[in-house]
Image (cartoon, rainbow, N blue to C red; front, side):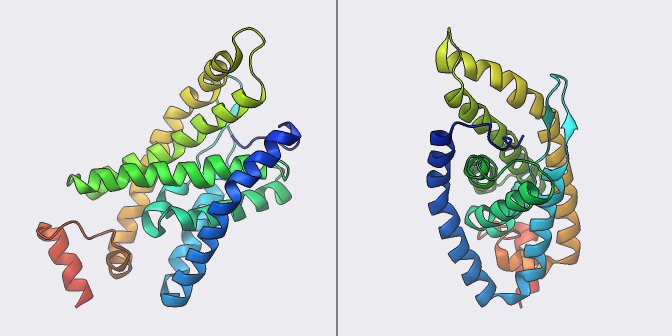
Length: 236
């Protein structure tokens, strides 16, 4: 869920914008450096951004009467690392606010923090942890995309609870309410996004094996078996 225009108190909107800014600046530098060093990655980079834009633009009704949507940030985080997704996610959210009235400019910082920063970092951390313990690539991709999606909504629940604490139970009471509305009902969508991301990754393995090898996606360990041997053969 993108927090709508004008929904957050001004102080909260400014605070989330300030918190997001360093990540976006760092991501912009990383993106520029990657494009300069590897211009051949531009097409795959654009595809990752388009994947995020399309999925996060979908508004799907949830059982609680609210609307939810996938985020699409897990794929880009796995391919290009989370800093790059901070930029792609910010561009996505900005265009959606301007063109689709999805989200808003005053709440851009909060939406960037949840979807373009925390989501990619959480998903990438899970993906890297699972790969370190030799979990198969597609299993790690599914879990990474799932966590990237779900963690976004958990952070959104925290943001809303901070802005609108319950009169009786305060922050924790509000967190329970917002979490049940957004985070819990997001689980089926997170599963669906994980499966879709696995499907896209399978297609990329077939069509862009050399690029995935350069990005480190197909490299496992020094004794990585057939997958490592295949990746090594591509780089020769």
